Length: 466
Ligand SMILES: *Cc1c(COP(=O)(O)O)cnc(C)c1O
Image (tube, rainbow, N blue to C red):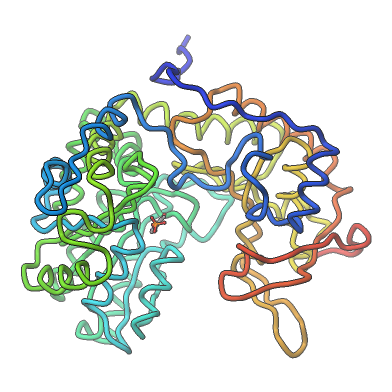
């Protein structure tokens, strides 16, 4: 019999979580206007709001923190960081930044101008916003399978290569300063991109002289999926897969808050000497000198250690297996989720689960509220609250294509019993799903309204169908 995949660590420091009862949670949620972003973290039992910056550092990383060299220029910690990034990612010019979006801003401000077009498999929201901030247009070109939540496909994060070719033919390569690939594809459900797809995108870019950049936030998780699912990689180490993968790119942006296994940090890397000059100017202007880029020396040291730990096979095996485990438990209870599970999160199809609520009654937000009331779990709506808009004149809601709820799993934080508890709570909410009332927005401040909006329950459970 195959044995359980265990957490590949034991626990040295613990952080107590405060138990709450349902009456308390009802009060907290009402005071927070039914918006999980407005809850106090101490009132949350299991926090699945995001996997960004919420991971646990290892003893070795805490040792790195103590070792951190805080010299303004040329710190030892910077060189440890630079050497590690250069070894794994292979790029020549490496700039630390305070987080991923700062790397994006510096890259796009250096490369893009109004009217340019930047394709990606799917742009993450900060990536899109930073591209649009330069006057350029961000275009999503996901593969066909990636648009369908129900069907399993091993590499749903792939880019549609034919669509990329068609776009280049239509607008001309001169209008496309770079092509991006996000691994794993966060907005598409944490779905991986295959090595074959990366090579094919690379070939198209090369043919037209367009640089290819990787949004590398979850690169290690993507490498594990390549090893598990792509022919020819079963006995290649995640480290070697990463080295090959980045050899096809001209540069990358990275949020170390994900697969850097730290709570803050990021970087921008590439091989173009002329571009690097422009980037370092912006970096010094807005983030800090090139050997710290808005981070403390200790942060750089912890990233260097984290980037090696994240590629360990036992870590990645546990990481991907524990996300899949939650997906399997929910599926066994009948809960509809995006299939197959991605690397860092499970996405519940709230539109299908609460099929008595039309999208305008915000089924995702209603489910988020119930998960908190039932078991103190904090999740986030990825649907009409996040991507929809209210027409100022008619007050009608333009709804999103899907109504999802994301359960993001912080790295090395929760044990299997926490995950079991989560699946039990979701199953209990599922059992009484048709009694759940819809929600409405009573105050909002676009853009990015989901962070601050206020909600109320609709008077009755919705009548009628979607
Ligand atoms: C988190 C994330 C970013 C932005 O990084 P921050 O550190 O949050 O600024 C960019 N792209 C993807 C795919 C991400 O998940």
